[in-house]
Length: 312
Image (tube, rainbow, N blue to C red; front, side, top):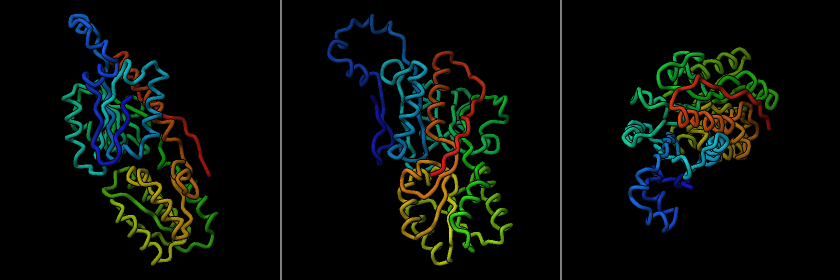
């Protein structure tokens, strides 16, 4: 099995040479003609803008989805892993590399899928998005995605109202609500920010918004929240925080800020409360969905995970 490499590595590669090596010495003795007759296994590109080291549970869920559809990595499907390691400007080059390797399809989160869509109109793209794929420009229509892009959406940003309601129950006397947002807001994330602003201002509270793009930024954001007297915290739905969930949750605890998150993984990492659909389920569905391309080499209609509310 070809597991993602630890942080600091761009990708792990499964090539023909490495795969044959896992079969043992007998493989080397196969006649060349017999080896040439073996059908080529489909190769899936698995791409993220954030670290793969923080996405092992998502990789496992994706593999499980493939397995449920009859595909096992290293046996009848290969996976090429790529990560931009929080450097979004590297995504186009990573996509180009996958296209050159003639992958059967590319699976990615929202930023990765947008980069893939900009680079190719022929390689199928299966996105896993916590935002609205139409607003973000991944597909023009939910019922008829068109083009080469389709996927699974778990719409974590759609839970704004409920998350704020729960936050008010936790901190009913909070005069100011803090919101941590990622850099270069995507259209759907901007909508989440507008929804939070409208709801907080309607309740007569102040909203303190700070943008963060790195660990240092996140540390500084919490210092700002403390200085300005924030009484509760709303974490924006963005991959950059998902990959730093332990740090974010620990800082919220350190600063005694009741916080609400969009993914259960934050609560598992020590966060106070999460509310939203399951990203793990979404990646499992993406695995079963990706298998359709490997079998039929055609693009099925767009598929969405069923909402599963999670509070803890």
